[in-house]
Image 1 (spheres, one colour):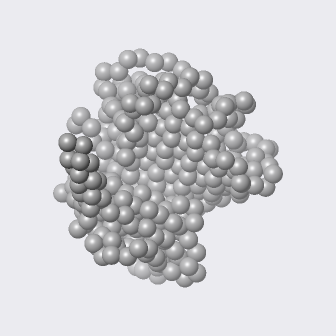
Image 2 (image 1 turned 60 degrees about the horizontal axis):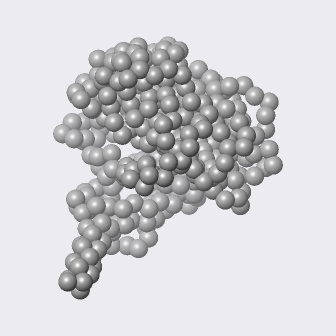
Image 3 (image 1 turned 90 degrees about the vertical axis):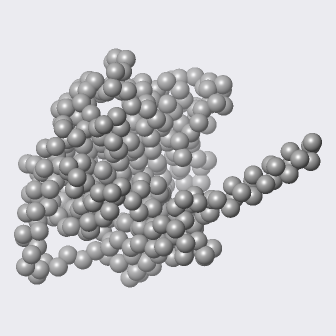
Length: 383
């Protein structure tokens, strides 16, 4: 009997290994072979994928059902590329060259195309209250945060967060979002002690500010839209529909256009469905002279975060008949006051959506929840 169990276990392990294969590689600039950070890498027509790290390296586990599909590589400021996954799986390590995106200013259709893209984005912004869930709305998040300073050990924090939004996407605006979104850290697991305000700070509020559809800011603010250069990168198939992929960059890198008080650059891409102008995804790369450690939107004289560069993503999916936020992330690098390189990452995946939520008030800017071993031993983390 024991031998039978062992045989079945080995058979299951071999079957599982055969079903899931891995792609490893690096995404580089075709001109200078430098790694391209935060490249969006995904199976075409799905939200399954990953992103390259700060040096352009990546790893992607590919389930059997995706192994005959296409894998796309999309980085802000670069032309998209697509490959057959089956061919990539034949190599132990791959190098993906991306060419810098060029904008042909002599193209006679540029002005006309810009007006069309302007209307697409403006319509998508106007349709948010109709396409997205209105409040009250409850969202349960799985939150991950990592911090690495120089050669120090990496700090890791994971948490479960309950968010209550009074108005949700009925009234998308910055001040409305700040006033009507409340959240609480209900479970926390971390490998460090919070001995200071900075280590106890959750940072979740700043990540929520990257939910561009809820705040209707930046590229989705009609009053600011004229200050962005727009380019149609592609019209791509997605779940039986077509999606406009529009790249943009601002000519005014100020607080209103970027959400960052000291920004010097913002380039982004927004994905909008042709079905009913639903916003499916937004991603940005931001460079900044410095950041306030508490929030990028605040002024500061501190040198705790200088030479800042970060990439953030917001993804939206239909749930219970309407769209809502499904995922947020922000990967960040900067120099601290000791001139040490710091890498920082925050990710939030929506676990559950509730249109009849329990009311909550306040925000957990600092968490002090005790570690509950029984909860984390049984908690199923999203892939």
